[in-house]
Length: 149
Image 1 (spheres, one colour):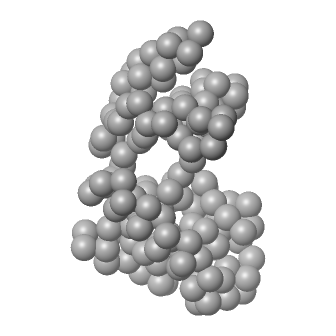
Image 2 (tube, helix red, strand yellow; image 1 turned 180 degrees about the horizontal axis):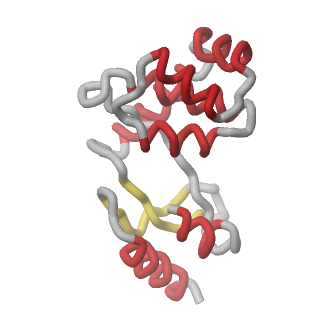
C-alpha cells in the first residue's frame, strides 16, 4: 500500500476510498477493532491504527486495543470513551451492508473504476481480490488511466 499511496494517491492520479468489512466469523474481535480504528481517526491516527491492527491481528482484545492506542500516543480517556460509546458502529454496519450488496464475501478486495461526473457514482471496471503484489495494482491502474486519455 505505501507504493500505491506514493505513486498514485499522493500524486492525485487516483482516489482511495476505504470501507470497513470486519468478518466476525473469522475474527470475533474484528468489529471492535474497526471501531478502534475509527476512534483513532478522530485523533488523526486512523491509518496508523489500521496498519497496527492488521500487523497484530491476534491482539485485538479490549486490552490489546487500548495498548495499541497507547503505543500511538492517543489521548486515552478520549479514545476509551469513543470505543465504549459504540458511536461508529452504525457507520461500520452500513459499510458491511454496502459490501454485502456488492457481493463482497471476503477481504481484501479492491474495486477500480471511474467516478461518473453526472451522479458521483463509481463505475467499477476492474476488481482485484486478495492480497496482491504492487505490480498487479500498477498494471491495473495504469491500464485504466491510459484508457481515459
